[in-house]
Amino acid sequence: MGLAAPQLGIPLRLAVLEDQFDIDPVAAALRNRSPLDFLAILNPHYTPLGEEHASFYEGCLSLNGLQAVVARPEAVLLEYVTPDGAAKRREFSGWQARIVQHETDHLDGILYIDRAQLRSLSSNAEYAAHWAEAGIDKAREGLGFDDGPAGISLG
Image (spheres, helix red, strand yellow):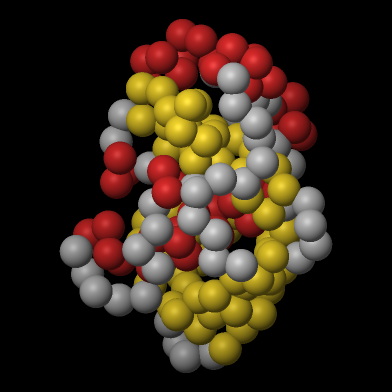
């Protein structure tokens, strides 16, 4: 879904994003998930649009084998520069907004775990065995966490 240059030890504010995975239509609808064509972004900055947040499990290659619930703004405005030097502004919503925020956070030294509901932290095996469903209701009730924003806030 995305990779930020610092994850590869490259000290640049550069990330690449893409989401072309086929997933269950029910899960896609609940997560407001639609395909995202390949996009390279330099020096990105996002601003939340509105007050609405969505909470879902996230994982990351930087913390391989773990997942946790993260509440993120449902929609963001991304300002960035393209590889050919053009300044752009683009709105993202749903799962695409989550990808934008996750990868842009990497460029600010923030990992998803810094924003996560820590009671939801699960290995991939635990997640698959107990919490793998489109939403987080079962995990929230079973693990006893709320689904509001947690951890680091840049706002």
